[in-house]
Length: 339
Image (cartoon, rainbow, N blue to C red; front, top):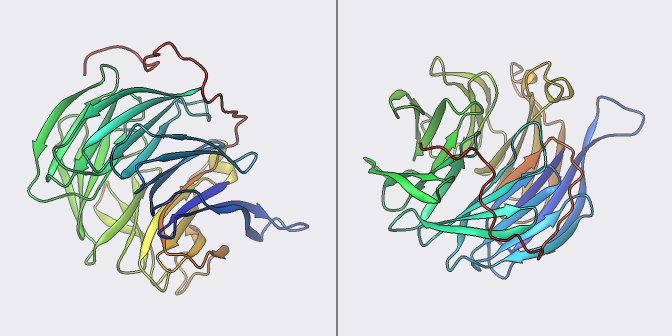
């Protein structure tokens, strides 16, 4: 299991979650790399298998191979800060097929991930994009922006297919793992919608501002934010299924759901959750222990940086970059049908 974190100080951090020698119960976050990869603060990170990417306020995307702990190239198509990144890796593959990015000028860019070649830039919003989420099918993506709007991007045809004004600016948008629902965060509120018609199902009240969110299996949505805790919401009932109060001593800026060994094999639920706070601490939690009064993290690392984002992967893959190879303007390798 790998974790990658970005920081305000321009540093990228890589960690591997490993079991200690001669112990199957104790885990440790082993550092893989740490270096200043951007010339401005890092805004977003993404991981798929052994591929990782980071987007910065320097308008650049940096690419990494986690298997060699090396930076392998840059993408410079954006003309503003890169605010969101997402890999598309169709199952059962763990290696990414595409990288989708969003920027502070309202643009969405689509890249082929083998090799990393720019395919298309789509104007999605009139102002900067706060977040994007790719549907599990890889055919479309949702974006929310500073223009207080929600947009749908058709990744097959390479154009915006839907655009509507929201009652308030949303900072986060996420599809659930099956793509049947999507979530939007507006300050302390989380709205749950049906993907088919955007119908509102629930509105969850976190009391304090939500700064990060990650979907889990069985309809769970994990959130973290200014309350310094972690909550797992049951989006079928609208109630809190698990909660870790005071998970950090500072606000939670990133959260990742990692699969346990049984879940990775398809025989159980993911139970490992990683979180990162603005004071530089990364912690890994076993959510099965949340019924305790004060659960302890199973692993922890301190970067001494102001962390801004966190991404991770529980899948292993053999992935090698072919940066610079000619792609002859490849299109997305997904079914070409109208949305």
